[in-house]
Amino acid sequence: MTDNERDKIRVIVCRVDERAEVIEIEDKLEAMQEVVGGLIQECMPWEDSFLLWP
Image (cartoon, rainbow, N blue to C red; front, side, top):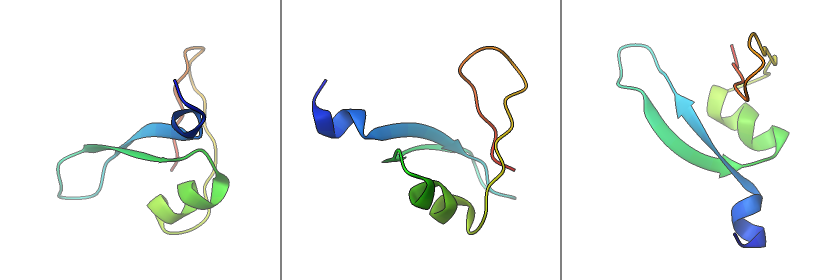
C-alpha cells in the first residue's frame, strides 16, 4: 500500500432517493464535511470498524 492510498478511506454515501455508492475520499475532516455538506457527528454504535455520519 502506498502512502497516497493510506491517506484515503472508502465510504458509503446514501443520499435520499438515490442508490448508495462507495466513494474514496481523503482521510481528513474537511473531506468528510464536504461529502455531507456541513458539520458531521461521529457515531460508532458497534465495536467493529464502522462509523456513521448523520
